[in-house]
View 1 (tube, one colour):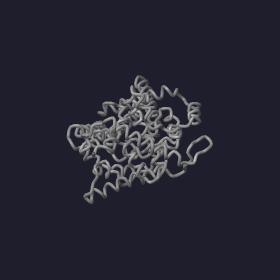
View 2 (tube, rainbow, N blue to C red; view 1 turned 180 degrees about the vertical axis):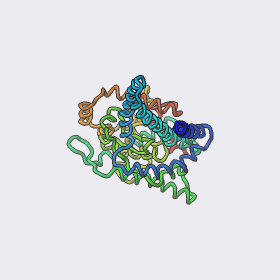
View 3 (cartoon, rainbow, N blue to C red; view 1 turned 90 degrees about the horizontal axis):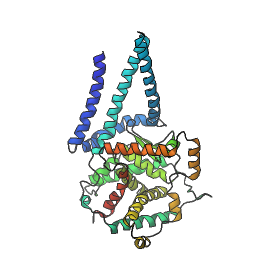
View 4 (cartoon, rainbow, N blue to C red; view 1 turned 60 degrees about the horizontal axis):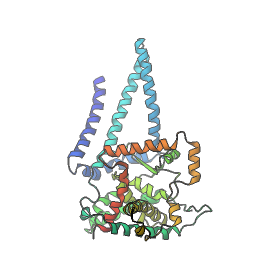
Length: 387
């Protein structure tokens, strides 16, 4: 019996290791997985977890902490009882220990299949003519100007309350799912008709079923980490921070839904979210995408022109409304979060950044958390790579 229990764990771990090694060493294996295998999990396991209205992944994290502490205490108590030659706790500990390591083995397998392997997928523009595009100042500034002008114009279109906050009450979750599916379906149609555009071979993977994005249970805790959304690989769920300012909902939901289709790189999820939002036909979605893109592009422009104030002064100013709408959470929400916080925000944010950076680095993303900003490169390739 003991051998069978150990064998089960070894088989699960072995499968995970073999799959990850194949993804790393065999060219095209991760792409095959993303295109043909990963969608099966989303259409089956993802449908089941999607039936729950709350975030199973987030709940699992909290329960795991409690369970690990329980297991440690149980082991200590069992050790004491072993010394006393008692079998009562030994049997309970044996059952729990077996369950504990079974859960760990299964979680490792899910993490490998639904996350780690996807970091080995061929990057979006790698197999296109745009891969040879070289970023230059002229295109970067032109892109920045286009985004600023669009954002400035759109900022004037929204109704606002007395605090200047946008009033826009729609079903963001449904629209984000439709926008993502439509982006994929349009690409799929072009591929099948022989009129495929530069990224359609990849974007067609976005077609099909999506589980509904779920609000994070402890959104206030995620506010302390400056996290807009989260993808839980072991539950295949797209989650969003329900306390964010309204302009963050569209981009965040589409970003997390992109992960559900196997686009695990953060810059690619940002870029796909951008495409889905600007093609959604919905004003707030288009505005959200523009703000997200502008945030990254403007940083790059400022870095490029850091010692050239005379050039910076010729750029189109970003309107006060756009700057206001670019916030993560309102000051009122921030005050509430700080008031009820269990831990200091600076400590939570530091640990969160270190965790994300380490996770990305271990998965082959050399620039870690800075990889989010690579969306600028994707935007430049999309708009100028075909020239």
